[in-house]
Image (cartoon, rainbow, N blue to C red; front, side, top):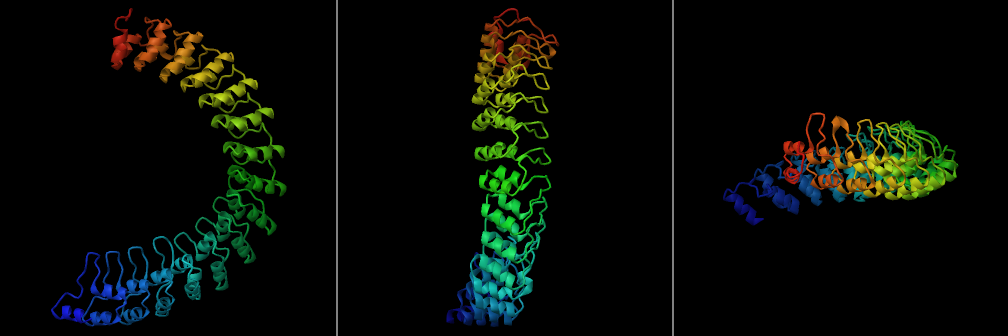
Length: 508
């Protein structure tokens, strides 16, 4: 104290700041030196000066729990609702630290207790998060705090319900909190409790007359939220206490949602409750489509055992088998094929499950589909075969399987291209070699009279050029623009190809 007086007597600036922009008053307030605070105020210290993080002396005293210093600062005009760079007030900091007496002083002096910080929390919310029940009870005595709304329309009840803080939810209800309030997305506290699996909160809110059938912006009730995360007992509670089984805005049932999440026990509950297994949503998908799409085999087995139709298509005319084949879900493909799924059903692009498996390189699924009777002569809307798509994506083993299965090597699509053209476009030398060895016509002319050799030369695929020439590709063939393969390599600057072909004849 004497040292401070001495410094002030020799005209040290009372408001001088350190590297964190803290003045002597900030330090004294935070350290609890009330006599120094009084002296500094007497010598004219700036009462509401801010640190580099925007905090005043009152912020620091409140944060540290120095009740008497807070009272002193308030008595001489400290701004109680001043916010720092996190938009936090002194009472916010006191509540967060559990300083009940400081909160009492600030509240009785008129501090605003519903200012939200930049994370959308109030003093009441942070006190609850830290477990400061006495502080919460003090703040709850103000109705404005209990039902204060943040910028997304949420009251403290939303946060407590989501965190599973039953005691604090009970406290809020005791002081008049609204159990059925909605945020900007029409979500209610019981939606969040159901989503997080807090059955005790769901019971509490149900008893407080929360709307169990409240729909959010997507038309989803708390039952959907519980189903999404596999909370079987909450689903059971909701159904037993008045929740209705309704569809959301996509016309999906809670069974669709549970199937998508792989929650077999929830699925059993919903089927028992009367949800029709084959109900389609607005995309034409049944619950089986969703279970297949996420590779939930146990859910698939349950749905199929309970009446799910295996050959039901969605709005794109895809069967569950199309989806399983596309994603490479072998065990589900086996299950569906054993139950006589239609392996030759075409979707909107006229593609069978074989196309999807071939395009994505799922060898074992291709093998299974062939064994199950897949038609090798099927073409899609472009008149491409499964071999076209397998070759274009470089799946050599699948190409071998398809060839062995009797697929045409030289079939042309609407662009007049063969599988060999597509293998060449993609630079897949191993596929090109396989097709050539199997007898593909290397001189087939595609769009613009282009052969596989033209494609390989233009794109600099030297290995493929060598393979094609070894299998008697005709060097004389010209494109519709009158160019040979050698000339295309020259124009495209493919020096390695040009060098290789230079001594070959004819060049033109």
